[in-house]
Length: 436
Image 1 (tube, rainbow, N blue to C red):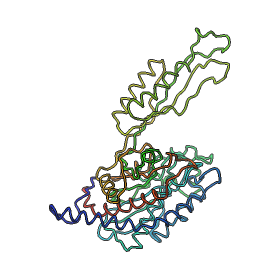
Image 2 (image 1 turned 135 degrees about the vertical axis):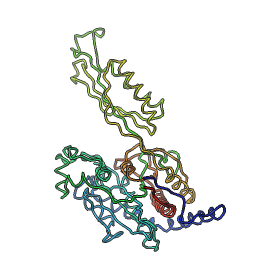
Image 3 (image 1 turned 90 degrees about the vertical axis):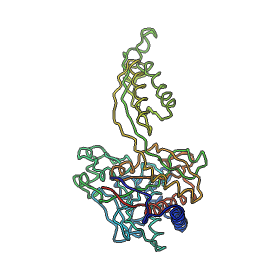
Image 4 (image 1 turned 180 degrees about the vertical axis):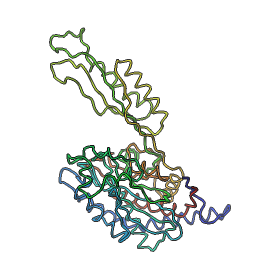
């Protein structure tokens, strides 16, 4: 499905077209500035108290009682009333009709959290989308195209298949995935069924047809914007992820009676490779992480006989990921280790036309911007299988996220919401047709 942006409702030429586009942009910016920032911040504080455990952060885990009531408490029904539905996967979807068109524009994020999380990850995006709807309603602004706001179910990796809500819409789930453990110690299937959902229906769930574009506002979760003093990040894409299992094998032996010359220490063999992951990733301008290392047999008086390493690399460029994989595989093999590829998630570029619209809107709002990749996964990467997408980042203070110390300045939250509304209005105007 190819979506065409930029043609507008009528064809104009030269100066007339430029003048018309400028007028449309100014209208979008003027409308966005009407968004009530104080109300947004009060809602953010209210939502941030649902599932909050003092001193331990947010514990609004997927399908917990607090998570299930969060969409109602944060005003989903107030924004859409009877036009709010819950699909087979537990995604809460608000529908706003369009005046003349049938293509659907999407805004969305999630209200579930990681254990000990902060109030900005996910919650800001949902509340900003609802603030856009509230502004449209209060100011009597009618969109040409229908608008859907979605609170995705189970975005965080606290159950088996995650992000479950958007994976369900994209048709990427199997029933076997629900046998994996959930955060409460049961299987994901058991947790799902306790929330009165049906696994078979989740697997066969699909979104409405005629999807035109998906927009997501999110905190950066890194420190680039904060460090550089930049107000808005225009996301160029979501990085691809490669994971590998590397095993170094030596010989376990007595730590006191085996001379240094006779030792076949698997950890000593692994040490150069461990530092090489950092060096190779740095040299190629990407990130590489060893997040798991197990030494066997794991006793202080026994020389390590085996070391198991799980590592991952992330980058937006598949060719760079290939080069890094080749180099790490060579280094592992040279060190006598096995190197087994695991999961591979392809990079997911954002739509260039939507990126251009976000940039134009940000400049018109007088905000500083940069183009940057997202190093974290998002629901947008699954929505990208259904329609073009764009993402807007706002700064994370100190680059802290998934933590009670997660912070984004009030002004940046409001800037992000107004960016979202102005981008929505501009896309609604510019969206011309979909060629099936």
